[in-house]
Image (cartoon, rainbow, N blue to C red; front, side, top):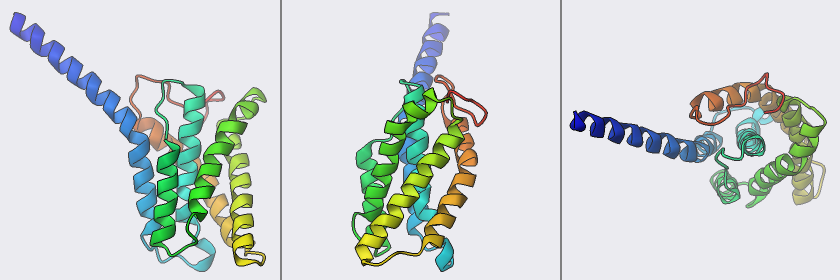
Length: 192
């Protein structure tokens, strides 16, 4: 009998450890997948070219917003966002630091404006859309400054709209993959 109890305790401890490890690794793995998706040529036309590159913005906002509503939730380190942006810039021959700055700004906007928008009672998706508008404006401004002429608005605006519409699906998938030991924000949850 003692053997069964010890095995049960050992398995339960291993499962708790695996669940905790998965919760910590999930933000990093999700960002790695989004980064690879943004780097791999998708054959999208000129108007759609920013859609994969803005996918990490949705992840930065999700994990930052999640951390604001649940202090036990894993965070997405800023260093990983920066590295993701640099990798995308280097692999797509873009201006080095462009996406790194955009991703860090997205996380910063979510972190700084999230509590204000939560107190105002805004739904999680509305908070994301407002953050995405700021991020798209910043991305357009940086591109315009870099090229010393106004950048095209349509590609970045279209990408921001597509990611904003896809964000509830992304959030649902990430919430489903998150271990149940912590609060899982849902699309209909006002406080998450």
